[in-house]
Length: 214
Image 1 (cartoon, helix red, strand yellow):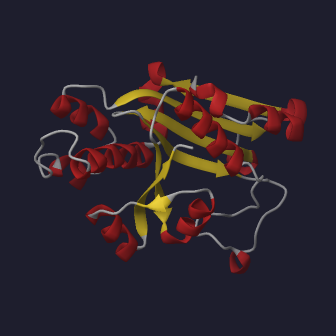
Image 2 (cartoon, rainbow, N blue to C red; image 1 turned 90 degrees about the horizontal axis):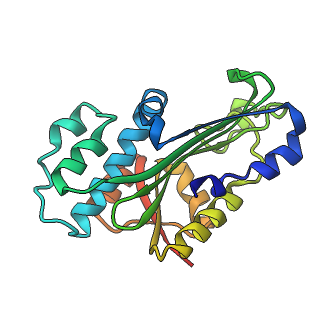
């Protein structure tokens, strides 16, 4: 189950009874889309990019251009119609807070999807220690406002275990900004060798990466 990937035991050990957790699965996909429209569009974009570059289906690479131009959060549904199969087989979004849910005490955001052609995608991952803010001048990553919790490795290891038991070949993700590429490289990911990756590197954002399952 995708739930097995979430490091909840480590979070509960750290934050105890104050931890508040909310999970949303495939049955609540509309809520995930509403909460993460750009993340869902990026997820669909990654699936389409791999279908095109890996030549898994004989498709016109430009036929979903309108969906891309409007950053369609339901891009995955359009892809499913084109390929005649579910582009997202399963999906899970989990959020955790240190107490009553509010922006100031958000601890974790995690979006994981089991996608077409036996791959596991990390759509969003954020770990945040609310008590350890980082001054703007000291920030290493564009999106990081607080110190993390050191749990990214645990998530990726759990993803690898999930994929391995199912015979999947790759984990995938899209680095939101170029400064995150070295971080994911430390965890075994590499920038994909295709046009979308080269464009992403040049623009400094939306860079597709992959990691072979151990």
